[in-house]
Length: 398
Image (cartoon, rainbow, N blue to C red; front, top):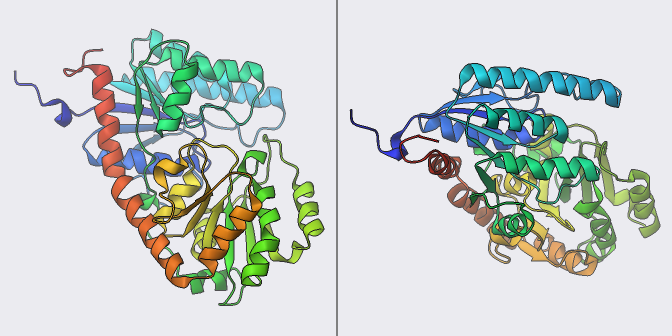
C-alpha cells in the first residue's frame, strides 16, 4: 500500500477553544478555514460563536460543547457549568477519536488541565497554542494550572519569537515549540463599509478624524498613555475623536472611572467617546472602517488580534514596541512603533499619521499587504498542519 506524502495526508483534527464566544472566534475562523481548505477534517469544539458573520466557518464542523459559562452568575455555578462543559468536550473527543487535538485559550485552568490530562491519557496526541506567555488575569493557583497544561502536550505553538524565548525560559520540561504567526482575518470580513459610510453609521460628520482604541479593557493596554498623549495630538493636529470601543472590564482589573477622570483632568474629555459594551461584528467593522488610525499603546503583550484585524483592513497603525509587535510592524513601512509608556512619543507618531494623508495611505496599504502575504490563513494553516505531522511522525504514528 502506497502512503500519501506527509503534506498530502488528511487529518482528523479536534480544535478546542473554550473562549470561542469572544473575539477568539476570529482567530479560530482564519486558522480552521485554512486547515479545512487543505482537505483536513476539522471539528471545532467551542461555545456557539456569537460574533462571526453567518457562513464564516465553511466546512468546519461545530460542536457546541461549552455552554452556560458566560451567562451563569456566581463563581460556584460558573465552575459547575464549566466542568460539565469540559466533560461534554471530552466525550466528543473520545467519540471522534481524532488524529490530533489542538487546545487553546484556557478559561478555568483547573478544569482545562483535567481535560488535557484526560486527552493525553487516552493516547490522543495533543498540542496547544499559548497566546499569552504571561497571563493577564487569574491568581497564582490559576496561573500554576495554566503553566502545567503545556506539560500534557506533545507540542506548543506560539505566535512570535518573543513568546518562544519567554516560554522556553520558564518551561518545566523540553517540548517542541514552533513559532507560527497570527493569521489575518480575511475569511471573516466579507464586506467592509467605506469610511464615509462608517462615519454616517456612527452619527459623525464626514470630516471627523477618529483614533481607535479597541478591545477588552485592562491596564496593560496603556489607555492612560494614550489619554496623556491626546493634548499633544490636539496641539499638533487640532480636534480629533478618540473612540474607546470594546467590552467593559469584567475579570480584568481596570478602573474605568479613573480613566474618565484622567480625561477630565487633562482637559480632553470632549475628545473621547466611550463605547464600553460588547460589539457585534457589524459594529466592530464599522468602528475600524471609520478610523483614520488604530492605536495600540500597550505596555506589555505577546501578540494582538486587534493588530492583525487593523492590518487586514488596511488601517495605519501606531503601536508600542513591545512583545512580538516589532516582528510584525516594521516602523516607517507598515506602521509606526514607539517606546511603551511614552505619551510625547505616542503623540508625535499619531500626529505624523493624522498630519499626512499620503503617509496614512502608504502605511495602511503596506499593513494590508503584510497581512495578506505574511499572515495568510492558507500559509498559517500549512505551517500548523506541518507541525501536527511533525508531532505525529511522518507516517502518522504517535
